[in-house]
Length: 194
Image (tube, rainbow, N blue to C red; front, side):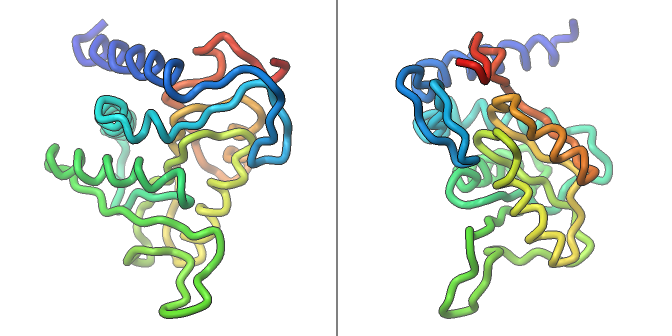
């Protein structure tokens, strides 16, 4: 194993530990954004707002896309979950001299001011990376994908912090998009049946 791969494994293991401690709840049934119910739930905000968590997330995502060609002009996703990820990636990408400009997609367009659904100055033809905190079926990220494609942008990859392994991969594949999870439900020894 190369030193870069070993470092990524160490960072990934540390991120898993933080998520398990701060963002994973197992217990009474809850309703997910997809409408499904589950006995386990990831609230990623405590991990995303943790200084070490944010650093690990941004480094792991940038490492996951480092060899992608063409590289990304923009990174974004659906409000609220993607916003802290986008902010930390923007800062870290600048520090690595591979700056990626951020944006976010509103659940619905504002009814005042510029009345925009996508907040950011995306250019038609731009290469866009979509990020999400947790994927179940992929519905939220697909809304972001469709919104930026309507602006003439290209999306070929979605990076999620945690994939619950409940169908998102197939949904993205049907759209010609690769799903790259930093972690999955399997990393926590849980499954959709829990």
